[in-house]
Length: 374
Ligand SMILES: Cc1ncc(COP(=O)(O)O)c(C=O)c1O
Image 1: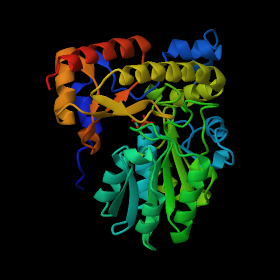
Image 2 (image 1 turned 45 degrees about the vertical axis):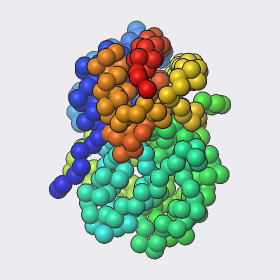
Image 3 (image 1 turned 180 degrees about the vertical axis):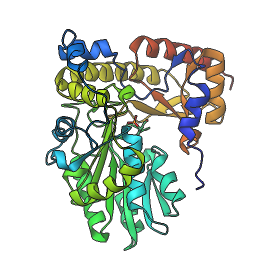
């Protein structure tokens, strides 16, 4: 099966180990095992808890405890609607593998995580792109979406909060998308891996799975929960879809690691403390980035409302890839070029990692920008 190279992952692979100041990261600064156990009050008891564990495959779909913890992040979901996967990347891949046939019509937003259009394309689906434009604050144009759907539309794919733009669709907008999907019977897959990272309030906006009988939401422990190393994600979907995905999942997953399943539960059972830490990082760091952008004449952006990344328009006279390589080689600072996400003219800055790294990286990038001619 032919598939395009995954642009952003390729960029990371090429440069992640070579940079000094990584502003390409998308996780809220990752937790150590020690930090997690301290937050959960389990430093003294955890070893006793795991030493007697026999390392079998564990519970195939994910433990009831973990699936219930995940379900409690939603308004209407139960453990039976949750399937545990190897990160959101496998959650998304499994949904496509299960539901997309050659010739199906799929509509995906762009920019977004490339999985969402390249995998359906590789399965022989006809993929139409719904461009998220700066003049619409990177929200989908619903008139355009309405024009795009046909009775053959199998799936509409959205990403909320959006990577890379940090745009956020509220409940009312999601409900309008549901109405359009319902009019043609399409599934809606909403990649919600950044859910919980809003700049305001509780951090959580409505989930698509709670709004639509054919709604599928994917999520994970990686971004909002700072635990990418667990490689734990999930699919939340109607029972019919869960059952169909299970059949595919048996062929490529079996189960996630027992220790990972346990640590994910421990984290979700300490959610308030983790969210307090992470919302403080997200909100403080975005304020820093915002002040920096305001002082950089060659850069501008639509301020993110959620997520961990900002999508910065470049007025540098260079292709985004060349600009990001030049910044990296001259300063050690790593951004992501827009072209690695099929969108020229922008760069993605991850602002949710360590604050000192962000401050140092932005200062070095400023030096570089001020030395640019023209
Ligand atoms: C929108 C989106 N979906 C899915 C993923 C994959 O995340 P995970 O670590 O849960 O596999 C990413 C990672 O960057 C992402 O940005």
